[in-house]
Length: 233
Image (cartoon, rainbow, N blue to C red; front, top):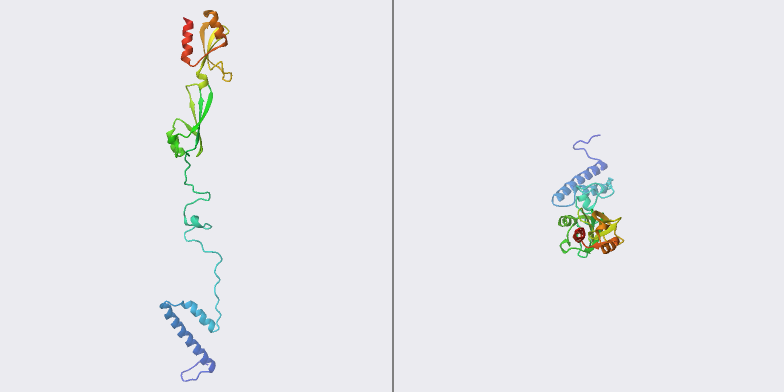
């Protein structure tokens, strides 16, 4: 039966009404405390409901840390925030020529097909240079290998012969005087035919024939030509 003014409430009704009034009063007090910097209304209200016998469920937090704001999924540290860095080290460090570097210079001589190689200390002006800068400094050479302690360079000479073939040899062969590049005294160097002169055995005396039959070596092309001109007179 509904309650009407002037009607006396039962004991249970009075208890329920009293608890309701108490709850409202506490909530209002908590709300005022929150405005003054106190604990949250929701937290304290939960304690109140527990006091009143009302079961309150606390949500279980999600497993694992939240994704970093602005970061890519699955990335941490610099990768997640867009920062630089590399797992293998500082990729920005440039390789330069060390003061103790060895330079290997390889030359191919197109005229004779030979090649030579020489090793030297690093030129002073090359120390500290990167590959790109060194290529500009040594523009006549091709850098075939580059490391701080060892640099290999190569070039092709299309006109000159190798040092071994700058020498000249005159030799009588089948009654004709022939000019070769190379030295007859160096069996490790293949003689390269340059010209067959117009001089024959009959143009020479016995001493010249004896010398030229085994071969006569000159240090330069000019010396050999000078002898040829003298024999032709």
